[in-house]
Length: 202
Length: 202
Image 1 (cartoon, chains in turn purple, yellow):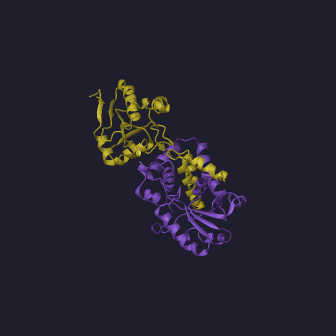
Image 2: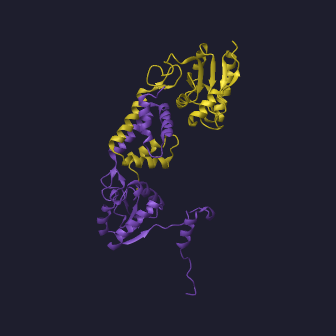
Image 3: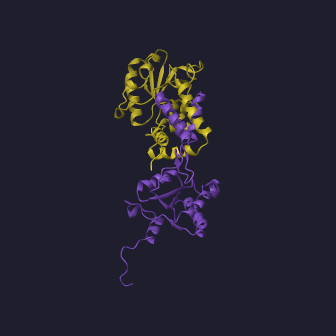
């Protein structure tokens, strides 16, 4: 007994998605088989329409369906600060924090020699002309090994260019118990401690 | 800043898939955005073609693209034994074990009062006319609570009907889904099945 070819094709296409192995793809395919035709057509159209409508903003490389993304086309944003992030999802995460009023630059990845991703595969070159108007660059790549390596690469690249450079703070996540923090995070949280009251003796 | 509508639509459709929450759907959407147009079109077509070509076999309710499924249309299969399983994926799992030569009956679910699934929502009624030609029914639902309850329901339903009844052996780890069992365990579970009611002809 064999799977019908169109089922095999669907399982193969689904298993190309990240984090979905052959078993999950099979489960997904069976689930989809049970769904009404309208649901499948809606998913299929959503895929095609997203691919048709969406592209990267020519300035910051965030995802947009307009000529420029919402942030780049908003004159009330602080034009002198650029926050460099790995992925478009990071922009939304930072926007949700409500703490940031500047612009973004989306690298679309991290430097990862293990996966054959060098700096030339990321939107790094396009960041350089933006330094003419920027006064501060915030390096907000992740705190993974690759995120750190990418931040270090950018730091060395941008240091000679006369802009203020910063890296997002390391520390405990808000709401986290000290007891459950890993040693490295706790070490960084301690060494990066912020003064609440100056030593009166000094 | 807001997501473009076509990105929102794609994330919404993806998050309707089982086991994919809003965060995973967002990651998947960004991943799909980075893929070449051909890949998206292939996934989209695979969805539509699977929905167009596939249906359930009118005899055993396995997934097929033909009039009858491969098993039901194969005269060399043992027509006197029917193995009752939860899902089409279970058929493939049992076929891989190579231990079974009979027919199948796919319930397309399990009895689950918690999820509002009663016996009438499964392909149970359609099993009854098949008892005319069958001598043994193997209950091969999973060893989850719902799988056990479904097997018990079928046992009580079929016991008065004069067929031999068996339940696959507890070679499977209790609490495990049939689909994830390895071939050897599954083969042992089948060959070690235990009789619930003796064949009255013997």
